[in-house]
Image (cartoon, rainbow, N blue to C red; front, side, top):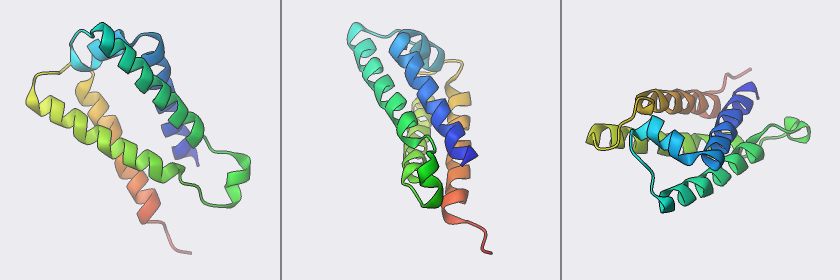
Amino acid sequence: MRLVALAAAIEAGTGLILIIQPSALVWLLLGADLSQAGQALGRIAGFALLSLGWACWPKREAASGTTAAPLALLIYNLLVTIYLAALGVGGELVGMLLWPAVGIHAALSIILVRARFFRPTN
């Protein structure tokens, strides 16, 4: 559950940054300016990430059963890894934090795959 809490905190934190200052995060990630419409869309994405983090935060009552949170985080992290890597390879939208973001999402994806599909048997 610590892994889910960490991933949820990272996504919620990123969502807060997008809500407060989407232009700054876009510049750091992609090295590009954000239009007014892009800022609005960035804030909407921030709401989604904040909601995802909130929904995936481990709850006491969920400790006894399985939840969809790890799978939701896995899908999200895989898609973001693929999309950001494609942007980086294309070379048009590359900021100084793009590749570290790819690495973080790829690492979270690998860890979540291992936790989801390669659980140790007792």
